[in-house]
Image 1: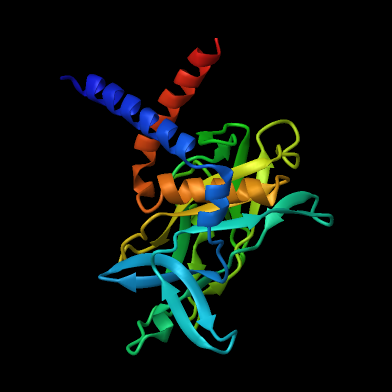
Image 2: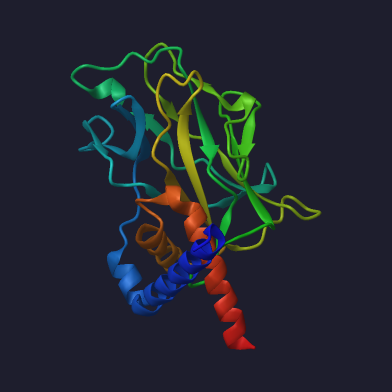
Length: 260
């Protein structure tokens, strides 16, 4: 069997799997099975590589730091900033956990960045599909640099330096923009971005991928459904995005044929 035939067969198989998932999971099941994120995106280092999870403090801001590495989906609402004139969020923040261990790692002066794995995806009520109409722009909170969905790498101006207290705590603005004539008027919808954390000098390996689900103008119930879909179909293996894309493309083709 040729490589092209194997890819085609796998794509059809993935599409069938996605159809099965969509038919089995009702909105009630979405709502019952979803636990929304609270706290920060935690960043740790294990076995020489970054690890992503949920960071929070047990008992409030002054409590005991906690890190849950199984939590890799972070859902938030975008808000319209009247002063800036565009849709943006600075949540969730990022927090380093390496400074709270019994033997803390010294990362003072290290440069850490955020990279997109792929372009932006949009929810249609049943699945996510690639969108060319919107992009997500993530802005360096300590400088003018930014990076956008689809880049596939950390842009030169986006590296964040770990300060002298050895503590990463940043709220990184994420701005939804349109690729049309008015960049400040993206369409309502729920969007999916897959990202990873990297070290500039390569001394620490890149993180496992994580997902941010952003809601612009849709209901909480819509966000619950989309959040649950990502947790079911993408995480904990978002590195297989190309496989997911093939399955989604096959599913979209099947849906078009069924409507004709």
